[in-house]
Each structure stands twice: as structure tokens, then as C-alpha cells.
Amino acid sequence: MKKTLIAGAIACALLSGAVMAGDLVVNGTTISQARIDAVLQTMTAQAQAQGQQVDPRLPEMVREQMITAEILRQEAMRKGIDKQPDVKAELQNAEAMTLANHLIKEFVRTSPISESDARAEYDKLKAATPPKKTYHAQHILVKTEAEANTIIASLKKGKPFAALAKEKSIDPGSKGNGGDLGWNDASTFVGPFGDALTHLAKGQITSKPVQTQYGWHIIKLDDVRTEEFPPFDSVRAQIEQQMQSQRVDQYINDLKAKAKVQQ
Image (cartoon, rainbow, N blue to C red; front, side):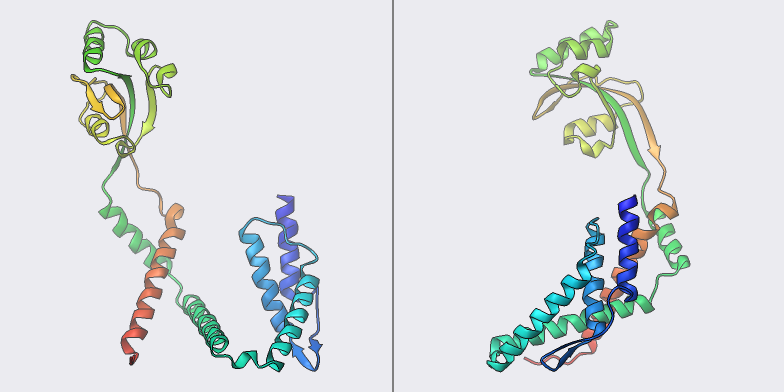
């Protein structure tokens, strides 16, 4: 936590321009403080996004890098490299992508998702999403159908499920827990297992063994519950992000529809 606070404080100082001030002049060409700040802001944001601490030497490192880049740029210009067709195309592409990215950022900034719009989308998603059930099950896994039928017969005679699982099951993940698989969505299991699970009543055991690629299962459903749709506040950010993405796509498609493209 302390490292995060320190990183945040350094970042604020960088963005405010308090750490470095003044333009650079390299062979008569000015590198403005605005350009330096733009690079600092990008590198700071990248470090924070990766959970890294911002290096306090970053401002000086950026200045040195920009001086070097400017010296190399001037030398490239002197040699006419900027006139080469592939270089010109690369520069044009870089300019196009930079402008496009900033246009989208400006669109997002000026077209925020209102809470009412987000709530309306949330209500629509909630209405369209069927209740999700999760199942608490136990199972006993054996190699043959004959073994499975023998175990089912023992269960019918009153032998405890957990005891048989510890004694007979070949599933190393659940054997020690009496076959307990915990709470899961049916879809997390292989098809035949999950399908059989959804057709059991609470406390019921499969009357016939269920075959999967792992062997033969005897399944007991201990409990089933219906999970509530997550509250609005817990999914609001995801909903807004999805809606904003859809709006950006629509904005781009509208511009493309109006554009005149010739080949």
C-alpha cells in the first residue's frame, strides 16, 4: 500500500509539471515541455497499469531519450531518410493512428454512459438471464460398470456414501474428502456427468452408473441453490465499458457509411 501511495504521489508530480520545467532546444529545434509531459504521462500510466512503482529518475530519463531521438531525427532528415517511400508511409500511418486514437478518446470523453442508461441495460440483462443454479455433489469413480453397480447396491443397503468413496473411488482429487466436489455449475463437469447431476433431486443418488471418459460415476446431489443476479454496483463498470464499446463501434460505422472510398 505504501509503495502504491508513493507511486501515485510521484505520478501526480510528473503530470503537474512540478518535477521538470522548461523546453529543450537541440541544434535550434525546440522540444516543448508539452511533448515531454505527454511521454511522461504515457510511461507513468503504463507503469501504474502494470502495478509497478514509478522510477523517480523517469523525468530525466525521458528528457535524455528525447534529446537522443531528436539528434537522430535531425541526422535522418539530413540524409533524406524521411523522403524514402517506406518511411513516408510509416510516418503517415503513425500520424493516422495517433489522430484516430485521440478522436476515439475525445468521443468517449464527450459521450459518457449515464447511470440511467447503465441501469436500463442492467435491467435488460437481468431479465434475459435465466437463474443460475449451482450444485453441491459427491461422486465415486470406478473403472468398470460392474464395480459401480456393486457400489450402488451397497448404498441401497445403507452403506455411507462418503465411506464408500474413500474406500473405492479412484478420483484422487475427491477420494480423501469422501467424494465431495464442492459447489459447482453443472457446465464445469463433462457432459454426461453434468447432465445427470441436473436431473437429480436433493439428496438423490444416480440409480445407474454414469459413464464418462474417466470411468464410471455414482453421483449424489447433496444440495442445489439458485444464485442471484449480481447487484448493479458490482457490474456497473463492466456494463458501462460494454456500452461504451458498442457506441464507439456505432460511431465508427456511421463515419464509414458517410465516407467515399475509391479503389
